[in-house]
Amino acid sequence: MRLKRHVALFQSNLKRHVSARPLLSTQCQHRHHRRQYTQVAADQPEHIAVLGAGISGLASAHFIAKEFPKSKITVIERSDETGGWIKSRKVEVEGGDVVLEYGPRTLRPGAAALPTVEDLGLEDEILCTSKKSSSAKNRYIYYPNRLNCLPSGAEDIDILSLLKLWNSGILDGAWNIAFESWAKPRPRNLRDESVGDFLSRRVDKRIANNIVSAVFHGIYAGDIYQLSARTLLQLPWKLEGMHGSVGRGLFRVNGESDSGQMVIPWSAHAWDQYRAMKDELDLPEDLLRELSRQSTFTFKEGLQQLPRAIEQSLRQNEQVDFAMGTNVKGVEKVEGAQKIRITTEGSPESKEYDFVVSTLRDKNVTPFVNVMVVNLWFKNPKLVPVKGFGYLIPRSVPFEQNPERALGVIFDHDAITGQDSLPGTKLTVMLGGHWWDDWVGFPDNDEGAELAKSVLKRHLGITEEPDVCHVNLHKDAIAQYTVGYEDRMRDLDGTLRTRYGGRLRVVSSQFNGVGVNDCIKGAWELARGMRGSGWKGRQTGLEAYTDERPDVIQPVSQMLKIRAPTHV
Ligand SMILES: C=Cc1c2[nH]c(c1C)Cc1[nH]c(c(CCC(=O)O)c1C)Cc1[nH]c(c(C)c1CCC(=O)O)Cc1[nH]c(c(C)c1C=C)C2
Image (cartoon, rainbow, N blue to C red):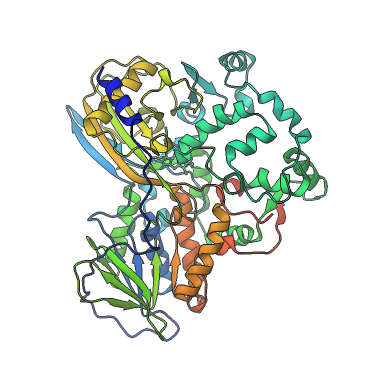
């Protein structure tokens, strides 16, 4: 009854348009900094401001401090805690304690985060989930009214499990992959379309609505009919643009190559960045070898250990200063000088900087979705009937099976082991995302808990009351790279360049990819671009979108770990 009321109430919410705010004009209040700094060499920025102390801001400060050890760096953050929405909490329960993650919880062992982990001496704090573990192998999709295990690799495909999957209907339309090369190529003037439309056109709408929408729920909590195919399915989009079909394109580029490895078109920018990372990030062989066997990793105290360690190391560094609880009100170029003026809320004085890195969110640049994260812990360790990472819920699931608009459930007790001091069932239910785009009000914490429990009851048969239940509504949690994204980024690059002359650059999940690794990699690239006299150039942080050089055909190797735009 209560659930029905919630669902009816939320569905009756009307579409709300996000209020427009000018780029980088968040409120701020700025404290003055007392430390004395040695005079810096003329070719180093004297004072740099980093706006925001989420992972992008912290990583930017970390890498910039290494590039310019004599510059003064001020990190300005609105809240009282660093790390953005990476938030880990140790919670006491009867007989021990458990770690709950309110936001991202694991990292893939990609190139970006590892040097930071090594720099900070966090190697001994790492907890890995092996590629061979059940949680890495067993990923489920709930469809239409049960869990279906997806094969994790060719070696896991057996006839029985394939038959089960086939009978569920989740693979309906998959045969059409075989006929992809016969689908009509897109019109020449089509600059972008949605992921859903692209797949419906080239393969089958059912595949888009079932498996693909589930995967996109797990990454973007987004709507495949709004997200950009050109940006998020960049390889298939490129291959179709080059050869009229994805299959034919892959065949042709490999037929013409004599590299002996599987090759694909890379944007020249992504290839340069990839090589630079490979050349410069000198990681210990044993750490690399160990992590290559892992599916994901995190830390003993939770993922927030990473931003906390970066913060701690920055605080120990004389050149870095934090202005916490400080709201940026205005960012403008100083007339006639190569400086950026930052004004802050509650402070009559503004402050001028030689260089500014902004990681602030701007809803004029991309829309965002809201995600409600409900963490539940039960003393009983045997509540979930299967072992695995968890399950995702596609858009095609009938409404009666998902009236709460859940996006997926993570089996944290399986996905990450070694954080809790006692066994139990630890789950995270993710609700909302694009399903809540039209809502003007959101469930409160009690309602969120009821919705999550209702999902668990229907999908997993869990009727027990949880011993712990934490609910967090993350407003504007995940940036949405919607159709036309890359063209908008090119326009934004022009605007930023004209307005700030290269002295303000951006890095964040709005520009560099929504993952933690993407943000760290973006911060590394930004700091590297400042190297030498690079900070005096007219870059904006959006060079990936304006690099007009033709693609290069190179091995696929790390491509999946590096997100970069297309130029077809
Ligand atoms: C906490 C909510 C998030 C959702 N998506 C992201 C976050 C942080 C971003 C994200 N999630 C994944 C990737 C791909 C790269 C990767 O590390 O695998 C990205 C960029 C995959 C992923 N999805 C879920 C998990 C636990 C992971 C692993 C990474 C992580 O720890 O976040 C589950 C999941 N995430 C979201 C939903 C709705 C969901 C559902 C079960 C949204």
